[in-house]
Length: 195
Image (cartoon, rainbow, N blue to C red; front, top):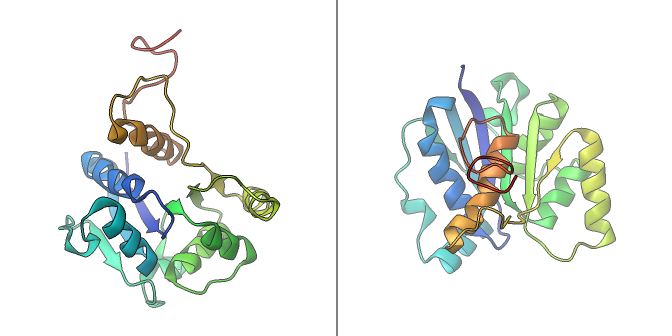
């Protein structure tokens, strides 16, 4: 199987744990990834530090992961010719979701998402917000009609997770499954779970 060329966007929504677990899980399935571009907004970095007590700028990434400045419109994912397969924005603020829905490419993250839509590639947005306003729902409807997948950060409980990381991982596994990864994680109706 040819590995994916993907983009991970992280915004300033609460839920930095989802982003950290997503990046950690990608390391475990690195045989399914050729390259991964990472875009962290400044607010994402601030929330990461606040919620996880760690600096995302101090993470040592493997050579197949590259972090890009959100102001860098010369980064490869700013153009469809770069050939990325999948983009995941996790967690995704409602502001970011709204800008993507409106076609407002004000930074590299929103430009990359715009490119994914115009190239008819997979764009998965993981909003971490509750409740949703009608504006949020209309933006999600518009993006769904444009080809994006909206996967709210709603954990599942049927695998009986016993720790917060395991609970959050139910969302990460679902997102990566939607992206086409083979994970071997818990599945409803499996031998380990309810039938």
